[in-house]
Length: 139
Image (cartoon, rainbow, N blue to C red; front, side):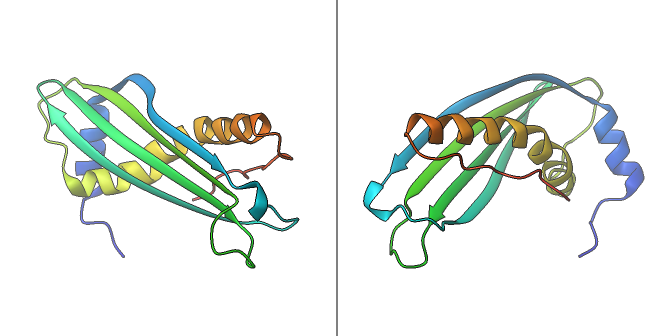
């Protein structure tokens, strides 16, 4: 599917954004020890919302991970993380949904992936489980 924003329009909005802060605003993890098996398949979903207000843009980006055995009805490990990424808007631009669809996929998700990988690694370690290594994200 072809993006609905031109490269020039995308570049104009992108040039107006300066990263301010990244924060984890919500998280959870759950272990069902009885569902652990040698082979767990991973299902990772992502979603975002955004709000432009005054001279700022806030993106709320969420990851959900389920590690589940094909023999079990429920995941052995469930981890969620929600991040707030704030940008200063330095020019008079309107951040559109079309821009955010591309920006979120190419920039925000790649930026936050390292944070989510580290959170998953630490959480699984603290659960006393063997490492659950998430690979590099490729687009």
